[in-house]
Length: 605
Image 1 (tube, rainbow, N blue to C red):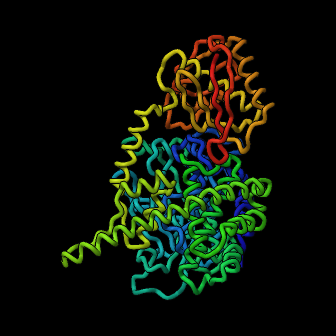
Image 2: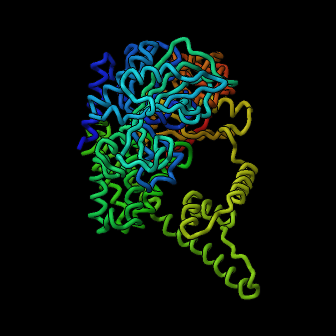
Image 3: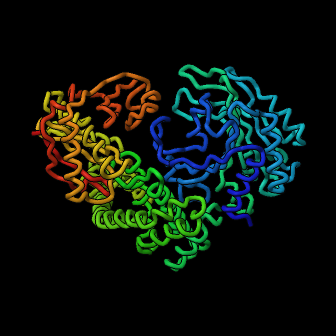
């Protein structure tokens, strides 16, 4: 058996011997430059360098990068889906290309992992109107000794790599490597394309020759190589398993859940599904909370995805018949035993991670009890209606849909996530009227706006709100200086009377901290600093130290507002011309807004 720790080290050592530099992993949380919430691929943080920017570590790089993909949340529970996973990668930035890469991958698979070259299969791009057939790679594969009948030419859907939904990103044909799980073909034409499950994809070499444009593709100035081998998948394959939850990345947690529940993972299908969901979602939550740019559960953005993961896991602890503290037990194993070497920051943040898990568990448990009762009332109402109608009309078609208004009431009144309503409904043979839910949601938003809930932070562009908006820039800069440089805006609402500013911070501010922030803001007001606006590209703004929430919020050209060197932000405005116009800044209240989120209400006098 090869362990996850041994596999990580084997990968890094192999490529370091080939002249690569281990650049380590970056944050799981997307920084906005690629338009996605989480890092979803090992190459994603390297996009600027794949497009031509010089990397400080050189042209040959390698690492093991954590990734989070949540589009398949509902699929987690089977043997192969995970929301967090690791990609073992190596890159050539305009250095070597197809000849060297095919040779090294072949060497690692055969000499490093002991695979039989006669069983290795490979797929290459068959070509289309946008790019030619990849005969070059096929020739190198044959020269290495791979049998011609084991080389498959496949279409773009199979052998072309690009980040969907993005423009300006590198892309190109890929060379995928396959190996049979066993020697029993399903028929005379059994191969990587037959779909019988005999062959497993073990890795992928992408040859980034092109840049994606609005209308197609254009050649890159420098040809790059991007290799991605899934550590979780490779671990399953190399250990001869067919269940991803039987590797050492999960098995200790599964064994703990078996002990706590008294149920068997192997013998009880319902318990097996619950254990997989609890294990996977807890692992991802640990990684997101314990990340260098860690997040906490909330009702928006990445925080909402985290909340959804945790609440789904909590529901399955109830189904498994264990206390929600089982998540703490699982989290401790991930932190202390499984990922202690690869992610030492988790160990440093263990107490904080467990605290956030407990907060969310307590909050959701109380809501879940009432929400489930209301959900059951919805089902009972449909059942009663069906029984009544069937008595008077034998041909009556039973109702199997939960009304959109009912689903929205669960969401709005009881905090019940609509995804959970859908999932529970499916388990009972029902569907949810999502169009009706969206209509109710939209109606609620319109009513809220009419009652004075302002979108985008500003109620209007009057002088008072303009000055208060400028004050939020000073407030955020002061919070970063007094509390932590990691402080960032999580929400804002400004009327003519006051500002409301939400920010990430794990505890209440002390009276001394509040006073220090208030004093610092007023000092900058008294200095009467000019507020300087300049337009530049997003990348230029980042290089000059301007901060902003997400790149896709601003567009290619951004407005930057500098208040000396004290505050530098990308923003749409409007702003005061100089800080002396603002008056006196006064914090009226500092309170909790959500888990890990604090709220300040302040005025200008």
